Length: 274
Image (tube, one colour):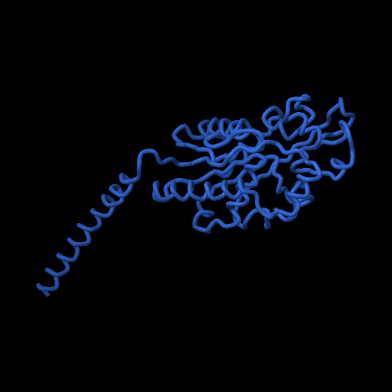
């Protein structure tokens, strides 16, 4: 009995010793996380005719600024950082017969693939650097939305699980009505988003008195009349002209997500899932 009491005392001391050590080990592990790691890390992709390497353009900038503002209002202690998805700038195309044929028979666009590869490396590097501490927010406008779709198509579940939310604006892959599923099915990515991804996709339209009708973003709400009509009846032709500065951008909803409050609406969604 005396020996049993001695063993019990030693065993109890061991439990006490290791029980005290475990929290300290946790503290040490936390201290190993680099100081530049954050609660949320925002990665954004630019659209056609804007941005470029290390520059996500004005539309995603609008989303990010609203996101940071609302997150800080909700919790002043939350930490957020960001970077642009690294792929080259592409100009707004002219949809002439040769260009249409070239796009119709293709299955990949080099800059989209490059963007998806870059995003995979950027987010993978962050996860490794921060030892899984961060949660990730993805936002893309126009071609940037396409890049995000291409990345998510092959993203491993271990990365998907760390993505809090995805937001896209003027998405050419927009289910059923986007210019890609309607005109360039070889480029279409299915499913629209992988299961488990919390996302919001915004496609802008509004009444325009000067046109006497509603005008649509033809990249995400494409109508075949855009190829069949001339003048200001074609939303696509209007966007081509607006992108060149030939007419006011009010004729092209695709270029008006900042001015119409669309970037604020998208940011509100991202805050709700963060």
